[in-house]
Length: 141
Image (cartoon, rainbow, N blue to C red; front, side, top):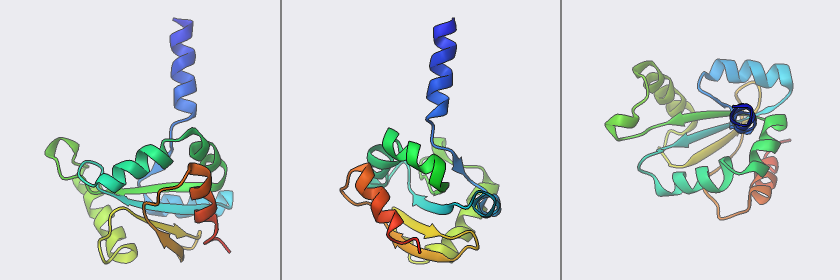
């Protein structure tokens, strides 16, 4: 029982903390002096999105770095009925896409300051998590 609790705690400690409320992301970014990494994904249909998730976002190296440096915001656009997000979240994600991803690219990653200003844009790149961190940081002034 104790091992199960420890395992649960340690797994939870390394989970990516994805925000879904952009206003909260901006508040957190301002309060914690962090950069927002806004990710547009098609989690159940976009192969490069899935690769980005598995190779970068889920890596221990990225999660450890992101915890101290980024506010991670996800706008997911799944297609399968079983993966659908709540209708209110769909509306929020569409509003974010209109402003930050008007061309509808997937995956699309916007590096944004605490005021909502885009500092850089990218997508899936075949890189190590450490290289991807450097790539994201190259947009930050």
